[in-house]
Amino acid sequence: MSERQSYEPGVPCWVETLQPDPEAAKTFYGDLFGWDFAGPGGMPQADGRYYVARLADCDVAGVGCQPAEIAGQPAAWTTQVSVENVDAAAGRVRRAGGTVVAGPMDVSPAGRLAVVTDPNGAVLCVWEAGNRAGAQRINEAGAWSMSILNTPDGDSAEGFYGTVFGWRAETLDPERGLKLWRLPGYVGGEPSQPVPRDVVAVMAAANGNGTSGHGPAHWAIDFWVDDADRAVERAVAGGGTVLVPVHEIPMFRQAVIADPWGAAFSVSQLMLGRG
Image 1 (cartoon, rainbow, N blue to C red):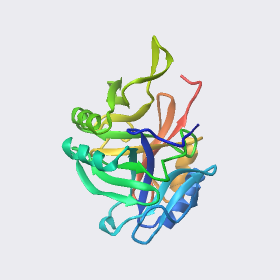
Image 2 (cartoon, rainbow, N blue to C red):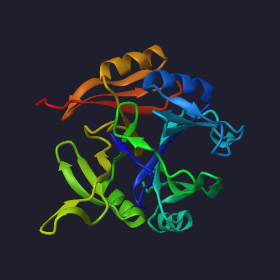
Image 3 (cartoon, rainbow, N blue to C red):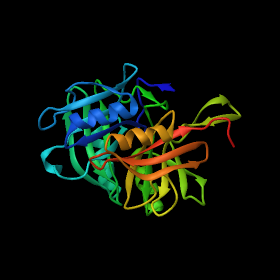
């Protein structure tokens, strides 16, 4: 488990889903992950409904109402990446071949954001923190753990995200098309053996065997759970759909699920002491 009160620029910091029925979505995710909710507030949605999901009294994710311009589209989960200045980040997005879909805009008092796509069409947000830096608990059961870019063009993705956020890719598993993204530099350790910075994101080939590694370019998100099989049972009981059944990958048992409104995500059970 990791508690966070701040995120340096270039680090993914928050996940949210905009839903056609946020009240029903609260019930689905509350039953699945044990979340309770604060709000409404924090984001200027069309009807003012935006709820902050909480786990052990800490913010972990957002559930909001779809704005009118995307009403009727399937719901989705979106990753936000911390930046020092969202207007400057939007400029880097354009120069690197991406598109600014919405914003930059103030979402006071929480912060300032822009919705962007990379050159292959994957959607994410850049976030300049106000009074909400991001998720306060990560990497534990019921909390967000990692965001994964699934893309058909890894080379262009490396160039884009390197320009926008300073990320550098290193190969993790060539057969599965998996790469790790880190911020440059090293921290801690002895001067002769510095420790590489933490992984900030993962990249998978869209036609490979990575997490949710199929379909057009998109950012997928993963939540940790205590029991992957039980999580799938709860999701199905709540109206969700199993997209990829529970299977084993190194260190985890994992499944991919869509909520009743189409938002896909994966759940992963950490399997320590096995292998």
